[in-house]
View 1: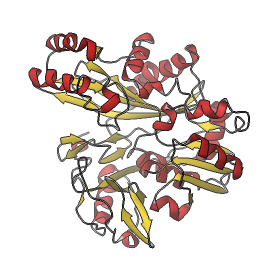
View 2: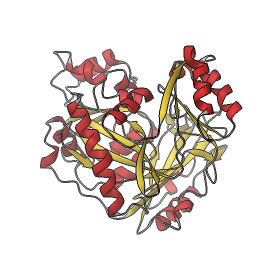
View 3: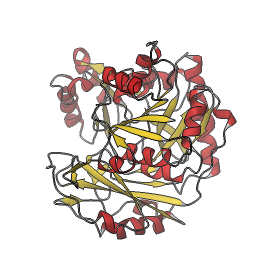
View 4: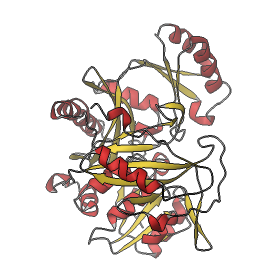
Length: 426
């Protein structure tokens, strides 16, 4: 098969790495890719949201399958674009329909879906610029901390958790009236704060059947001990050590099954990944959010642990025969640590050469924000590299990642030194 993978981050490099292990994949194109994907596949200079250019390329290269990495093209309706076009509607797209992608594209849509299908979630209400003062009154009815979520896509940064009521009211006005997160905060969901420990559950579904992929826990904040600003993710661990069979059973029966059944009942076409952000409160799983694609950096620990042929899994998704294939998982632990540009997630510089890549041993290096320039690998984003390692437990795996990070360098390189430390007592 000739496959086109859309995206340019660490998630896409990890997907490409795993897809190329399949005997079913003879050629892989990545649009637009990065310096890491350039070494194992063929990058093409087409943005993942340029549907017309993607269509031309797909016809030119006789593409057999399109796998969508990031959320933007899904929310913009790439699945529907292919389905409604007679020249390309025979090509399977791994990713949900535009309506299905609203689970991530609209926080309000997701909350309404959760409530409708009796899936545990925090109490909430949503507000616009017209109802901003009602939102301030709603904040007064809650106990701190206060959770404000931009309704639309904000690159993982549209959530504020604030202790002070007056600050929460001001930020609500900033989001709704002063467009703090642009169009993403035209509507804001205010949510009850839940105190617990977070984890990510990943599901692959063909719209009827599903497979639960390995669990993972990521680390969102820039600073150690989970301090500072939210980022796209600074590291991840899989499996999550505190997830036992009892908890996994609750997650499957109370959350995964009703989610897939809810999509089917609502006649929402969904063939792809569902990322369920969970918080465990007193042993009970509660949904914080849905994403409609794999997480990043969680993909960098989940994909390496999948021993099954992922292209065969994707084919089964396309043919709605996921129940006919088995999912085999590597029992070892995997960890990843993100190396980021100094200043990220605020202003940072790009264009620094990365040294030491050839010295990494016994770890996988997934490129996130990189590009090739005159044969050199240089930084090209906030999150630059993800260093993934295996171990018999996560402590052994994380030690290996940090040992290899010592061999890498670029100007103003930063990383968290405490990934997984909170799990030492799990």
